Image (cartoon, rainbow, N blue to C red; front, top):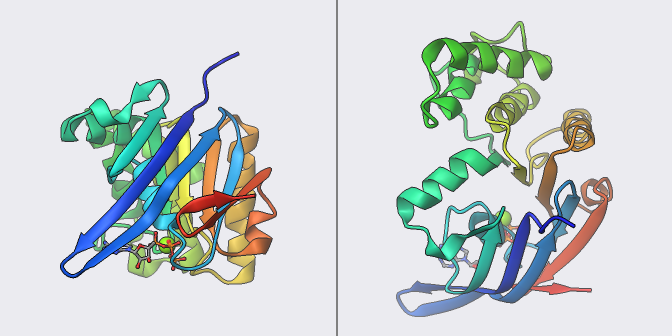
Length: 224
Ligand SMILES: Nc1ncnc2c1ncn2[C@@H]1O[C@H](COP(=O)(O)OP(=O)(O)OP(=O)(O)O)[C@@H](O)[C@H]1O
Ligand SMILES: [Mg+2]
């Protein structure tokens, strides 16, 4: 048996903002096996994005243990975290998070620059990744010259180009019409079929129903 890809053990995250203290995550436990397609579901304010930021090594828990792909994340310094992020995780956000005034090709190729991949290989792999998402004729377009669905496909191409163990998607269909949203979910299903582990965060029950397993977050904890 192989070890789980993700083990979260009694994770808490408390935000301190002046007069307020918000316990966004409160002793949350979660295990994700390699090759799973998991949806994390919960209402607004339940802690989904906070959880995504911790799973994605963008933020650290206030307490608890997180092991990702065999690495104890709390033992890493900021450079170590950035390294894990770049090698092991592909991110897809609701708002696409593409660099403005930058071509689709360069947006995707950028993900490889952080890993020190040479220019020629960056261009070849970014082109292949965009072609795989059906954007072979849009590589030179900038984000404002693409539809929302196309921008999200560029973001998915960027998430994939580094061949990460984990694809982490926070409300990836949130800004899309039904058809483009279905399209994105179909792409995630295909990626899952080729062996990727996918963790999808959503408040939409129909979107969540397309994952293989759902867990529900309420007030910073998983509920049955
Ligand atoms: N940077 C922050 N500082 C203080 N409080 C925060 C911060 N970020 C989130 N919170 C609080 O933590 C709780 C969880 O927020 P989070 O963004 O994780 O919710 P969410 O489930 O992603 O909600 P949504 O569905 O609306 O995106 C909320 O009560 C929120 O007000
Ligand atoms: Mg959120």
